[in-house]
Image (cartoon, rainbow, N blue to C red; front, side):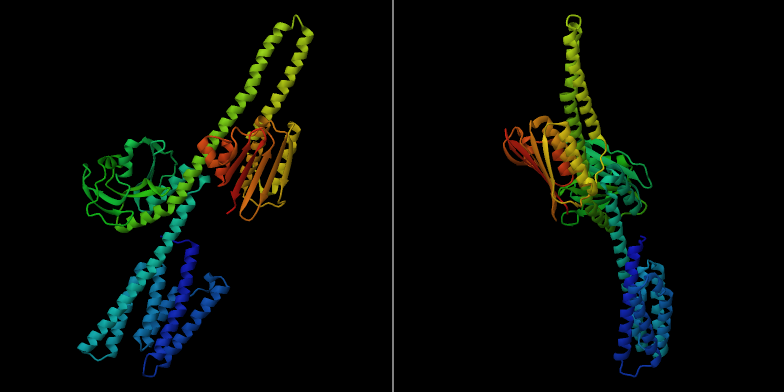
Length: 558
């Protein structure tokens, strides 16, 4: 897996630091661990190498690290030169394990294996040239060679694991970034499944989610390299076994041997990791539906409970236990952001539905009723005109006035339906401007208090707050029969709050209720409740029938 610049820089810093530490350890070993006097050449070599390593580490903190980095080829040359100069194999090992680590973190496994083999052979040959020929000498040489081989392979494994770990973290972050509400649900899931198909070299990736509330199964399927987003298949729950591969609690891989669904597989209980000696056979309909020769299935959770499956079908190579663990880790990572996308989509759908209901209700109760009344009155006037023309003219003037008023109301509704862009810098001015317009168009007095003159809020919160403010005043104008409204907008370190307080007739209920309590009682302003939830806020409604109502909206800023 290729790494981006941040991960490569992190590994380069690890290598730079490891170089300085291990060269220093090699020098200490050379000077302190041997009774015989040390030759000056290897000691001077290590001292110079250490100075260069420390200088590179310090320069990397000050300057651009890519310009002061020591080439890996220079470390190869230094290792070979030190093997020739040093009388101490243990001192050589410090430099050797460093170079192996540097090569392994660079992602070059072949070069790492060649280095380990060459160093092992070099240590054996060097020991054989120094020691007299004999059984004891042969055992000593082989022991040194074995130690070099094991330490080299072990350090190479650690370096490769470090690189693989960073690569996996990078991949998980990439998948998390793909799951954004702004991308849309279909596009987010297409990209997620496409990345999974490529990562595991599979022919097809599938996400199946079961919605118990509406008793439907939603299925997204993406083939490797596919770029067109698709709406999910909506299926009855009777198809669950096919796409959920039977039990949610089993993470499994399965190889089909023929068309009747038999085969072999492995897996474990996803809750405790207990291995299954006999993995349940997936339904034959699963093999038929996907044309599967092999598959891997992992459960995905929603609200702490399993709600669906991620399936990968027909890999280019056989799935392993490591692949299954890796897919489990991926699904655990992407589960919460994917659930958030689902929830936000659901909230938006409810908000849209509520807004449509409000518009339909406003049109039916307002303009349509007025048009119906106008039609009746025009019919009466047509009959009255020949007998009482003066009275008919007066009534026509009244009808004309009514048409003008309804035209203004319709124009206001159309204006309110236009997309609205509200930013922190504009919030104060927009709210005061709307309050002024509201006073002119109605008989309701509005007092607006904004505590902070320099509010700093995300644009989305500003937009929803302004819509709530505007809709609250419209509701008061239409339904509350109020003469006075007080609006307060404020902000502290933790939250922003909006309070709308009127002296009208209040709601049909009495007392103080949260939005959750209003939901259970099927009371309160639906659209305002949904807008508040969409930005993670809370709504409280206080009503005193005959004496007014107060709406309090609080939205956390963290």
